[in-house]
Image 1 (cartoon, rainbow, N blue to C red):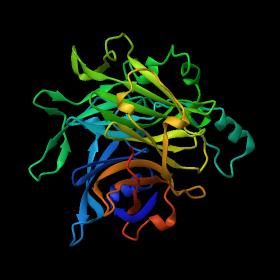
Image 2: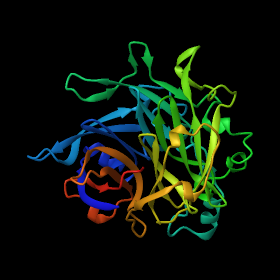
Image 3: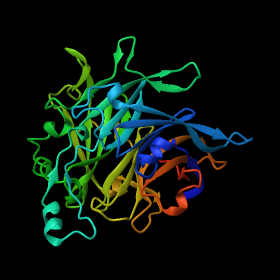
Image 4: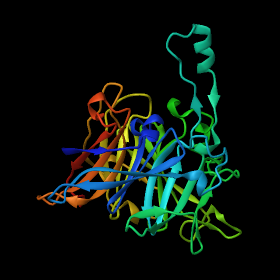
Length: 362
């Protein structure tokens, strides 16, 4: 996997103060724009491409902020973070998903041992993390995409907050139920990616990893018939099952993001625990054609390439397929990083993302 160039993502002063630019967790291209999210707020940001004389994208700026609470009723209110970890776009909708994770408090440097031990014993549940949002996309007068609360009957809608979240769905699951009470960084439930294909969503779990097998969930959300501001899950195919679990041999790594590529699924992989690497992009060929719960061995997957990572920094968190190819015809991905290293931070307050090319999956 070749890092061809870096492009600058430029954010407003307010977003820099909120550290959105150093906590990027999700990205998706939409024409000339990028939708990005950080995991410390309850907002989605839209950035617009800047190009050089040859029409090549050199960076993204012109930030516009979308507050989720202006569109949907967040269970913990408008100001609590949603820990957004995945964005998807399909059929005129933008999807955003929270981590659905519990959080164990961190030890702070310099604290007395007794206080540190007390913090390590404290597990917090933040309700805004347990949401899946579907937002209508429209084209503005400037020709750029934007999200709205209502578009001729297409309403922004939410799954979660009414004992109907994805983790509520898993309370009796034989594989995942035991992990519902475990914090994310302890190999507990931790959603970090979402991809849309038709009327299906594929949801990737950073954790748990089950004896080396990563977890992918497949669901089919729809508007709730009694409340257009809510979502519910529709049975898959002709059966009664509201979800499918797929287990993928990613070499012991968890899923950090997902990106559709035709009927294939590109999977950003990385450690499930608090480690730096390795970090890879793996392709699951024909993922969208699978119509049964899957056990997907490594032989059915293809390693697309390795991505760089740092020592305590440069954690690849989001990938987006770009509408550009190189002279060799290779498709390209944009990669955004959480905890970027100093050399990714620009004097203007921006952050550098990588543009990488890869071989097309057969």
